[in-house]
Amino acid sequence: MTPINKRNSIFLEDAEILVHEAHAADQYLLRLWAPECARHALPGSFVHLRCDPLLPMRRPLSIMRASPSESWVELLYKTVGEGTGLLALKRPGERVSMLGPIGHPFHAHLEHPRPLLIGGGIGIPPMIFLADALRSDQRFRPFAILGSEVPFPFRIRPSKHLVPGLPPHVIAAMPLLDDWGIPNRLTSLIGLPGCFEGYVTDLARNWLEDLEETVRAEVEVFACGPHPMLEAVSALARDFGLPCQISLEEFMACAVGGCAGCVVPVRSADKVAMKRVCVDGPVFDAYAIFGS
Image 1: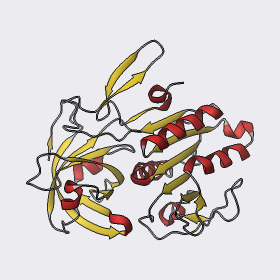
Image 2: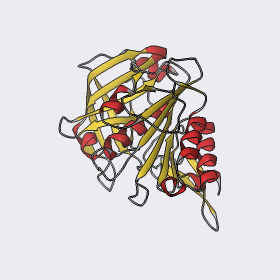
Image 3: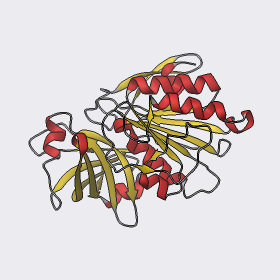
Image 4: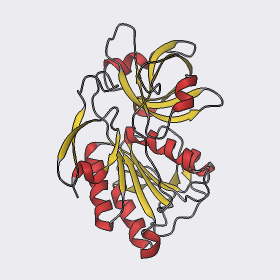
């Protein structure tokens, strides 16, 4: 377990696979024994994983959960190429080389005690991690909306929590969040029972429009998912005058800020600067990415 940067916050670990579960649509839940990463990870952090010794390039994967007390981190990924395809073949007991945790995390603000968490597809894991962190602070009242165009990697069930302002038939929830006491709803375009048939932003708009103005002013939006979804979430937040943080997912080579291969233009009041998604992000102010 070796720190590989000057701030001693990114560690190189020989991580042991504890759990590796296959789910529908080539999705996998991977739990790794990685004590340093588990101890230092924050919502929005990711890891850079060597999927196979024969592949020189690592793959960035978002952290979905972390247990400092039990020294593990969980990742949820979908096989999309050679690297993740080889990773999917690995079994519990095997080890993978891992850099982490990496990246600038989400920051919830007490002046906005109603976080709205929006995750789409492979952008769901950071929202689970953020929800896990928020549930320990009773001052926050988060609500999560998760969307997928393939079957969810968990068994959906009717929610135990009432959410005013939503269509009455929209009752599908993620059991983990529901058991944590966090109201959540699911959206899909493939006709899954109990899910909202539409985009995450459509359901979020319904919820926001139903809130009283003083309550809506307490909302802060957090999102991770495909680029078009993030742009739509940013536009939605702008329509309601709400602060919004987004996590970008870009192709990365080194993932520690050395190669500048993942830079994106970030706007401020008077200039545009090129920032590295890996270490300056992946979390950014939405308006700095998509304009105000």
